[in-house]
Image (cartoon, rainbow, N blue to C red; front, side, top):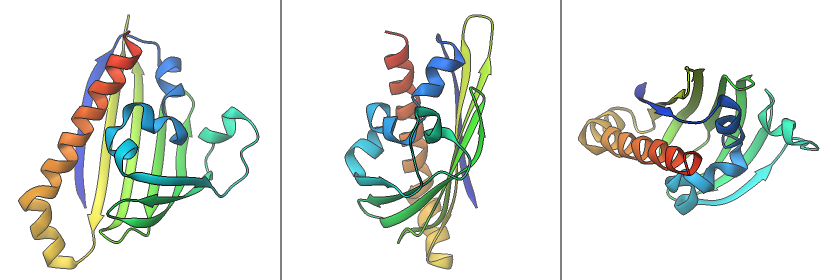
Length: 153
C-alpha cells in the first residue's frame, strides 16, 4: 500500500479546521474533489451537522477517472481525527484519507495522510512509481495550503 503524508501548522483552533473536514465541505478547499467529484450522495441518514462526522456514515460518490465509489467514516474523534475509507474505484482498490489535528500554543498541526492500493497488480505498482505517488503528493500539498489560506484569512 502506498502512503503520502503532509503536516502543516495552521493559525486556527482545531474546531475551525474540523468544520472543514465534513465530506460536503471538501470542494471548498480540496481542488481535486472540486474538479473531479461529479456527485456525492449520503447513503446513511444525516439529520444533524454532527452526523456528517460519525463513524459509520456512508456515501456514494461519482468521481471523474475512478467512476463510482463508496465511502465510509471508519474513525472519528471530534476535533482530533477523522478517517474516510473509499472503495470500488476503477483505478484504486483501496483509498484511505486521514486528517489529524494536534493543538499547539497558537496554531494547530494539521496532518493529511493518504494510503492507497492501486488496481492492476504489477502494472499498478509500476504506475505508482512512475507518476501516481507524485500526483497524490502534489494534490495533498495543494489541498493543505488551500485549507491554510482559507482558515487564516
